[in-house]
Image 1 (cartoon, rainbow, N blue to C red):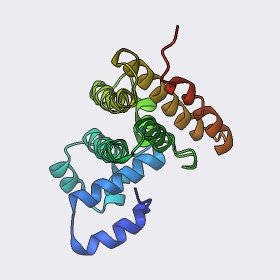
Image 2 (image 1 turned 30 degrees about the vertical axis):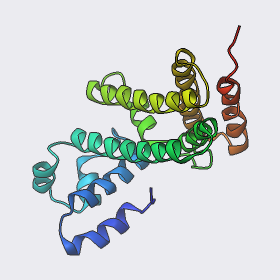
Image 3 (image 1 turned 135 degrees about the vertical axis):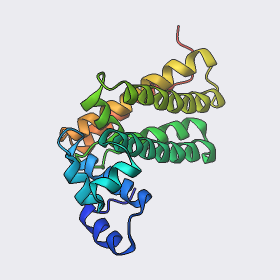
Image 4 (image 1 turned 180 degrees about the vertical axis):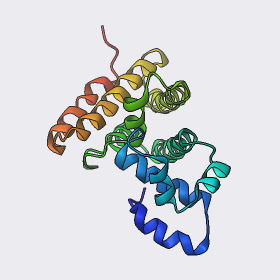
Length: 201
C-alpha cells in the first residue's frame, strides 16, 4: 500500500470534493500512525477533509471508520496473499513468501494495521475480534491448502499453518518494538521447521 501522507491526500482531495474511498484510505494512514484511541474525531475530519456532518452521514461513527479501514486493509492484503499462493510454482515456497509478506521485516516500526488494532482494542471490541478471527481463519486456510498441495496431510496442514501464521504475526509485533530486521529474519526462519513435510513420530 502506498504510504501517502494524510496531509498530501487532503491537499489533493479537497478541490474535487468528498471522495469516500479516498477519505477511507486517509483514515487508514491516520489510524496506522496514531492508533485508534489517540485519534480524535477532529483528527479524522481534518485529515479526511470532511465536515462532521459529512463524516457522520457517510460513515456513522469513528469506530465504523476503523472497521472499514481494517477490513479494506485486510482484504487487500488477503488478495495479495491469494495471488502469491496461487501463482507460485512451489506450494511450500508460496507459504514462505506469504509469511514474509505478513511479517514484512523491513517495514519499519509502524507494525501491521490489523495486528495493531487487535493489540489495542481486543478483547473489548467484539466486532473487531469477530473480524480478526474470520480473517485469521481465511489466511490460515490459504496456507493450509498450499501445504496440502505440497504433500502435507490435511490433519497436519491446519495446525502447522496456524503455528507459522502466529509466528509471522508475532514478528510484526516485535518489529513494532524496534527489533532489527536481521533478528526478525532469523526468527521467521524458524518456520522452516514447521513447514517440513515429513510426518513426525
